[in-house]
Image (cartoon, rainbow, N blue to C red; front, side, top):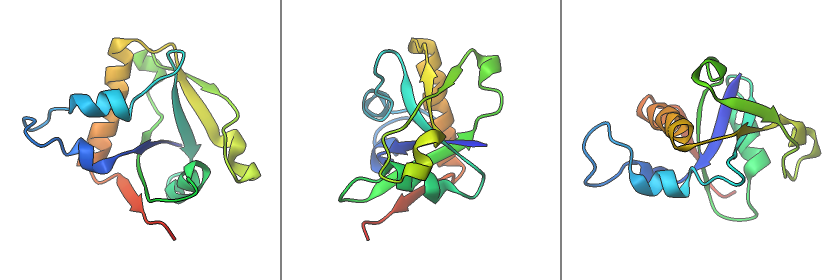
Length: 128
């Protein structure tokens, strides 16, 4: 399984940030938490657009990045299945929250998103 997070792709490129660095703006914008939890969507490998559909807004394009969910528990990250706010009823149960996040664990998730982008595991879906 993969975990998918909506991102702002242009900001992860981090103009002026040393190679391999993670821009602070992205940690504070795309990794914004609520109640120490981060909203993610689960999907099968190759079904990233299905997760994007679950996140789709009424207008504008959507950027997503994805990474395997394997090994997250070993890193101390807790995933909890929660109903997502999705316009497609069949996708509501694909939502998951990364819970009990602190500075270190949020940083681990930011590294996963950064590495996903660096290895080409991202996509921009245009407004149709």
